[in-house]
Image (cartoon, rainbow, N blue to C red; front, side, top):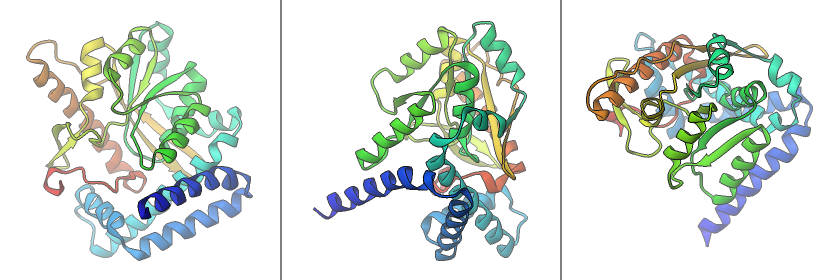
Amino acid sequence: MKAEVVDAATEAAFGLGWRAVKKMPEGASDALFRRLADRAWRKDGESVRQLERNLARVKPELSRDELRELSRQGMRSYLRYWNEAFRLPAWSHSRISSTFDLQGHEVMDAAINSGQGIIMAPGHMANWDHAGAWAALRYGSVTTVAERLKPEGVFNQFLDYRRTLGMDVVPHGSPDVIRSLARTLKSGGLVALLGDRDVGRNGIDVQMFGETARIPGGPALLSIMTGAPLYPVSMWFDGEMLRGQVYPAVPVPSDGETSDRVAQVCQGLADALCDGIKRHPADWHMMQKVWVSDL
């Protein structure tokens, strides 16, 4: 019964967030979420400690005080994501488009205009939902996979939220999810998959910042199956703007066992994501375990 009460309270809180936050004056909600970020940071719970363990790999040269300050900035960036998530459904199309600057998007434009499907693989950086809404406006639609959340009511709210932003969402673990995404790519569509955390617990080992980490193999497998180019993407906040960088398509080896080819593509993806994370560590919202030694 206690778990049911907690689930109901969690679902109600998220529902209130989507209804109330987007109606608040923007300055008030910004200040509220900064306070929430600082409060969570000072509390120094397990999520904050894991964030710091992750950031210590990215920036090993930092002192303890410097690492703490970076994690504080990271929590502010993370809570900015949530503030914007609650407000995004009320943003105009003009605002969504004008406040995201994606450097290198021309290669994706050319691929989509030629009828070729493409795969975008961002990390958990800045506001990937904003990027997805931008891409849906620019390219007509975006297909993505959503991690199953508990309770189920919260997960359903997230599905509805992303669909209102123009995304076609496939729940993680759905039957034939890879084949469904492959059909989208073969029809010339855009698939966006977060590439830096192994949600399904069956990921591929790669080297990240000199240590073995585990990332999902789905983006690499889809690229190999369909021939669709796989573009790593980094993102960061810059004042009121969201900015991003498209990296060159990850090379796909033509020979060898499929498992070896997937591993090579995953390492290429990891290398690009590491570059983006290194440049903008405060905007990497990774409070889960990524490195094998932590798992």
